[in-house]
Length: 311
Image 1 (spheres, rainbow, N blue to C red):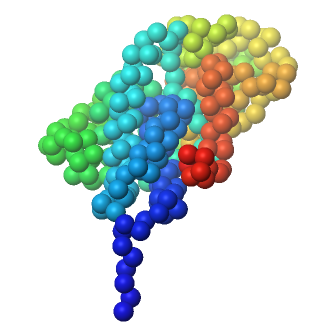
Image 2: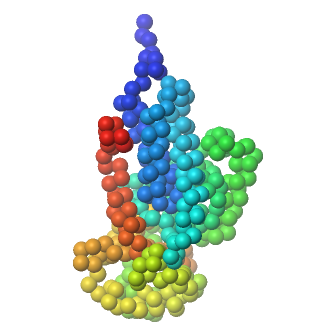
Image 3: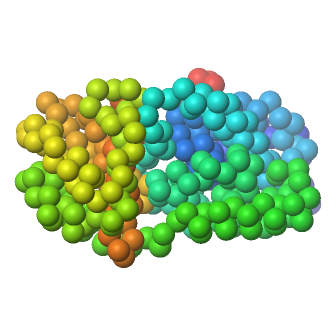
């Protein structure tokens, strides 16, 4: 007679295997809630530590346990991050992540991954954000979300509905990835040659340029509004483009440009575009966010062994 092994024989090797299987999803949930790959990695590492210490034989659904723990921890971090960001100098933008190997970052749908949408998500409360992300990106059923957030089913449906409405009021319909890449390339080409007329033709009348530098020299500390101002800003400093090495990158499911100077990455640029044209420019100057983007390329390249305390 074949006997099933007792759940109590679950060893650390099995715990690692289960965790690694779901790790991309856990990171994807945390990243969308937090808008920071560094904070998301910290959450995932904490979930791993808790998973090790849990009586896994009592866990009916590992993925439900891991998703719930990740979501609740991410909500807690988001609450404290909101306070920290009040002291941030200039616009705060989500940390871009490299999506060349995983365009959807663990999700069943790529929702809530573009920088423009992540930025709008920041206007929701952490709980609203989590509910929206679980439903729209990861296709969790309402009862599952209610269980994770420890809220009533009615309340969860209201939260997701409210979040959808808020986002639809603020969001524009995106162009496809090929058109997005074309517009970005055209913008960079016109900016490098100082062609203001071509830049204005690419921009919507209400275009906005946001520079995330946390006080770093060269980054605008307030949003720059309007087609003419945004076009002028992009060409105001010819030295910025002179001698710069531009490399296309996959960021948040879209094309971005990493700008290198003397072999060092200094600035990340991408756009949000609708059929009317480019309506938002995102410039990331903050060195820690540039480093986080480059680190994100190898995020899942190797899982550390349990002996080192990490996965």
